[in-house]
Image (cartoon, rainbow, N blue to C red):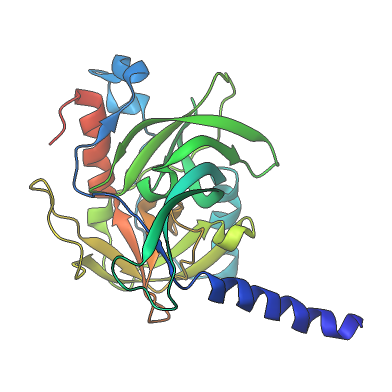
Amino acid sequence: MKKFLPIILIWAIALTISSCLYIEVDTGARGGPALYHPDFQFLKGVSLEKLVVKTDHTIADMIFKTSLIRKVAKNSRKAVVSIYAKTKQPYRIHLLPIPIIGSGLPVRVPGIGLGSGFFIHPSGYLLTNNHVIQRAEKIKVLTHDDSDYEVIVVARDPVYDLALLKVVGDNHSFPVIPMGNSDAIDSGDMVIAVGNPLGLGHTVTSGIISHTGRNLSGVSEKKGRHVSFIQTDAAINPGSSGGPLITLTGAWIGINTAGAITGEGIGFAVPGTLVHQFLEMIRTGEWK
């Protein structure tokens, strides 16, 4: 019987996936203004150093060694978290075997959203993607040592797909990954992506920058702001969203946001320049 368990498990997973083929997720309207939590109005006017630790050491000529990747991965491990968001997602369940318009019923289904994030300041500020937490009723993060913390959404931006979180009521000093300059990178630069794919826990993948300033069809300009992405062949899977894209100097230069559905070796990250704009909007209180 034991030898059949893997087959049964695979069949059960396949059956579960197939049963979800005709559930349509209501993603809501994108392009609206960034949202700012009223309890964090005190951030207006503070220096950027109060929100993020930065570094001038983004790219360097290095002899590629396994030990180098291992060192960067080890250092980043302490700052990357798994995000578990308790949500009630709006779904439309179709009554027919094909998703014909008008054949569905709107429902709200409770569930747990999985994603990744990382600390950018010792005081407990984290970054992730907006789509990871946008409908969350409660959010917790799990750190490398299996400690869990409740976090609150400080601000989020549906246009750039970014969210700034803050650990609630904890005076602990958290390890961080310093912010590099994403304008300094180019095609061919080595990078690693860190995250929590499929809820498996801390996972590291490596690759190169495939392209910078990538424009994607279906991602249009909203509110006068244009989003272009860093393209990489480092694996970015569901659950890795919100994790950092890191150079060999240990600086993060992007936030992993999506992998191509129809192609392997194609992933995308929101560049650090847009993250910088997002943090500046929080700091100044001027949403553009």
